[in-house]
Length: 128
Image (cartoon, rainbow, N blue to C red; front, top):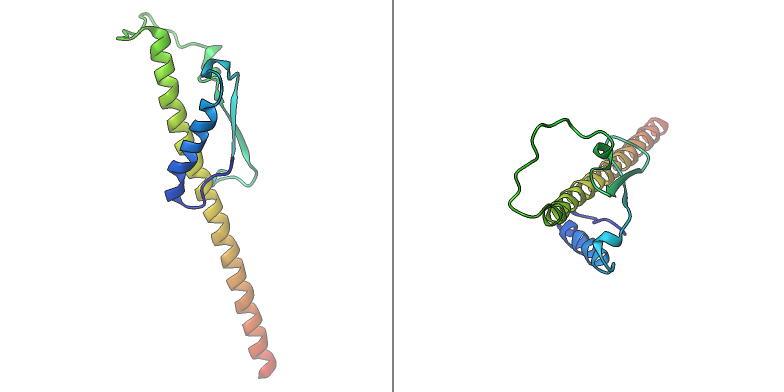
């Protein structure tokens, strides 16, 4: 799916992603969800696995003496947490990608202006 061209389009992109996820028979049937996006710090596109969530920590759980106190059954809590997690991740990735695209546009325009200035300077020197 494409990202937004301006910041105002990001909520519609998130809604389109959610609609596509809702088309799946169940969120449990989605084995993995990978986002391909651009980062303002890098040149190449990045991949980030969004589902299954918390996959990096599953092999190395943090030592704890007490289980968390939950007001919901653990499965219901996890499903609600996944919704919030995906929403936050999508916001972050879409805004990062938009920022990366805008930085590339600025670099491109700066290069074009620099080229025009060099051309104009060369023209002035040839006239004199």
